[in-house]
Image 1 (cartoon, rainbow, N blue to C red):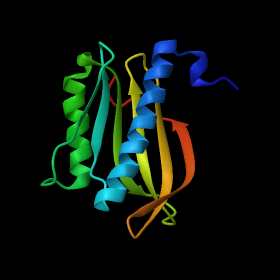
Image 2 (cartoon, one colour):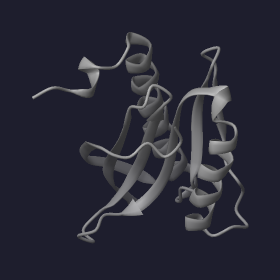
Image 3 (cartoon, one colour):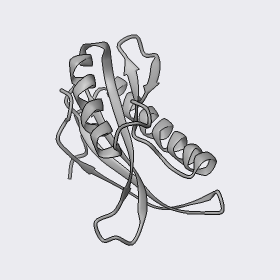
Image 4 (spheres, rainbow, N blue to C red):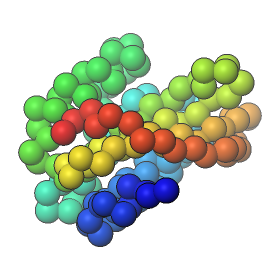
Length: 138
């Protein structure tokens, strides 16, 4: 069975690996310090630098994701890769997870998630999963 890595350039692999690491680390840190995780994005610009952004707290979290995707589609020519990060409850209702949608300008896209439990400001990481998905931006 072939992997996305078999078709991705070395640069794309590095971009997506660094994004998922940064996204999960930022998500974990934010959850431990604030007890919640508002949707945000981390992008790798064309020149390789990383940037991060969100839309603030005044908008419902599900609307934030819709607006982030719309804004990133308009500015996608400035990025090589983007991670959109949100807090979710898995469909089976048994666990919360940090959910990361990864999109690369080469066309590669996947969803990664890390389940967690948060108790007294301490995050305990659980299972991690990944699957291919539609590219939201390119």
